[in-house]
Length: 114
Image 1: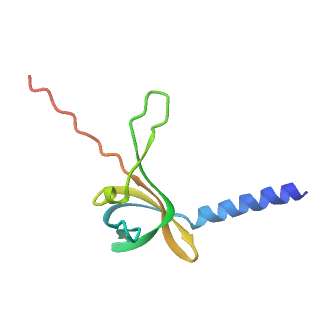
Image 2 (image 1 turned 30 degrees about the vertical axis):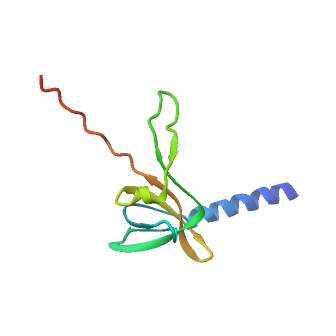
Image 3 (image 1 turned 120 degrees about the vertical axis):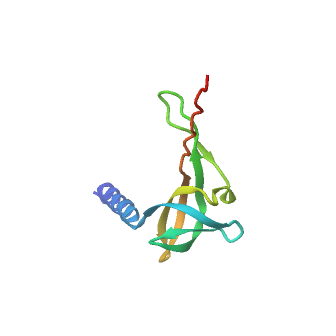
């Protein structure tokens, strides 16, 4: 009985955290590496959010057939002026950034002029 209560409360806690999380697709307009903040547009206004200590900042590399794309960790200054998916969570009543994933930029293929 104790196990089922523990599992049930764990699932409830996990789902509660997912409800609090938000995801934004935005262009990052500013970063401050020292203060660990990132600025991007939310509802037409620039807003600045703090990053958690263990925030994950990454992009994905090319995948080989049949394998998932590898994650490539990057530094905070590298995301400025780039489009990204930013995930936030509520910590101590404040919305903070937990992950930043740079959007893949599609390379244009050069046309053969022969």
